[in-house]
Length: 82
Image (spheres, rainbow, N blue to C red):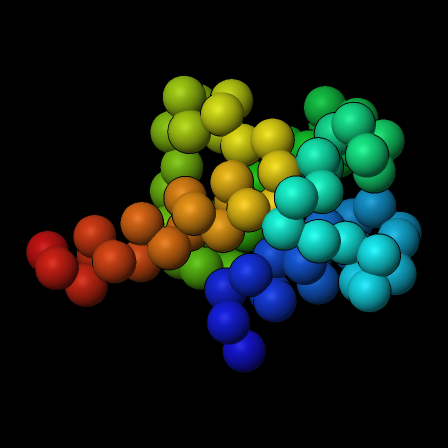
């Protein structure tokens, strides 16, 4: 399963929205009405799932599902290089 598919699954679970209604362009907070507490819980779940740590700045820039995927992909690529 690709990282984006895992992220969509997590977002779907957190927002209680069917996964087939979530796309890379979906805004997590605006489109899915995820509040700031649930958003932070989502970030924690993403960090646990992918075994990464995201900085505050990275989290603040994460608006869409694609943003989350790009962050995770970069983190995973970086950790494989190091």
